[in-house]
Length: 293
Image (tube, rainbow, N blue to C red; front, side, top):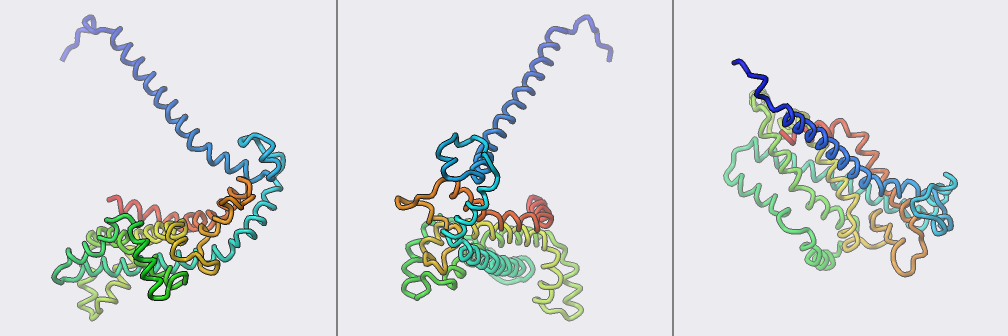
């Protein structure tokens, strides 16, 4: 079809192109502004951990430090005052064992809900997932009195039981959706060769679900590691408190700690979860891709 070039409004076309260019620049400027606002807390953390308390109090909060050596003294003092060694060991125990057992139970439940035929599968799934419908804060008072009555308040067992129970529903949802998409031909072939249901789960289904299993484990581990509320209520003794609970020693009216010390302690507390993410990042990203399908 022929187009008469004399009828085209070149001024209007130029205006539209100019508006598109300016729109792109405004979008880029907004993205840069959001990025800068997002990076300010990280910059504040980076410069504060390298300052002494005197230097922090006498200068501007965002000013560059005079030296890099104060971070060593800050780390030693934060580690000692908060007894972070005990807190990290407890959090690592709760995170590895609690998240690991929860994800294992969730994988077994997902296998049963997707691979086994029995009545009421949907009802059992709703019962498992019902724990996430209500705010977790609703469980605090009943759990506190129940733990106190049973005698597992401020114990490692009590904390571990809670974390396992609270971390089962979400991995069950993710793994159930993933296992629904797995081919059942290998299952049937293994059963024909005499494999029982647990063998099918352990040797066929679970290895093929390693990506989402790793992703859900890392998410649950991070949630347990960062938990402060339930650790404060259910495990507030020095021998059972988590690392986040240990950091509360820097707060309160009797604390003389400066922000530089608090930020150093927070940085130390975040290192294990960051390290675990980098170790498992390949499996985590694969699991997140699968979960998004």
